Image (cartoon, rainbow, N blue to C red; front, side, top):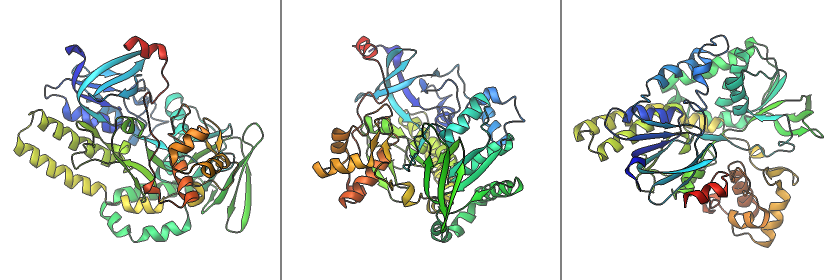
Length: 459
């Protein structure tokens, strides 16, 4: 081990949470490295911000303000490694990553994982047809290439779903229809949390602004849609659904789908971090203490890579993790630590006023979580269907890892990022075992595809 590749803190992920961690740690004499698998700072929220900052007609102020935030990062003071695919964290906090076809090994005294979120799968009939794109992917092609897909049908629910629709309207895209899958009953369940949400009214006003914009643009919106099915032979041709007792079919070649977000947890699980299933969001979340430290000593987990609670919460969690790191390195006085920690906890509580309301309102409907047809693909990488999983459970029903062995569900390139939650839901329902009693899939290194040649050269 050479001293040149040992860092006091290594941050993985350069979205808002990762950047805030850098901003909080820089200037204190620590040796810091920031790794990310994209080419520039910003994450999904501020993707390609430096290029797009000149195009104020296409992109609005809320997105463009990210440039000032990113400019505060002192790249002369930290080691920034972009296009770095992290594929393993070792027991001694060694980090392995691949960049430009070569794998590297660096070491950390502390690690901050700010891996962000992923879109939840939409396990309905035909959801893997060409022409069906996740709403976040639609956002990416807009930010990276300024590509606008006209006459698309948006299918889904949730704050990000409406935000992407709003962005497409802002750039002048023609939207054929919006099929909103938010269940009617969710509105009644969420109502009891509205008084608390009103304590932080700004997000509610922003949300109402989206709907007023949709009305202004005369969007065709179908609310409370159920029974979503995508049809087509070699590619998407139409989407059908039920609205009340009425069957509706819309012809389209492009659909943007969104079923909520889930933490991107594979790296955390590979590193050995403890987890738990959340009924509030029906996601697998990473356990941390009040300082955002996971069950693995010196590994901190923040933001949506821990639990889905929004960008404002992610930023505060970054501040909390950072002051704990500064305290551990004796870079901050105890009195200053106590003052800042108390202030950040207060800020965190304020950011969470609206969370219960949003979680209840946009919890996906059961038919968007559990496949309604045996032919529906659960694992798109290995093309494993609901029928395949049911058959494997007749042979061995010990849990997700047994199903994985029998069917290859979760063995593809994505390593269960998309199918993992659906598999849990299916096994729980089919075996009548409470979902929190099921062990999640074992995530082993490498968590991303990497050539054996690269790994061999590290030996």
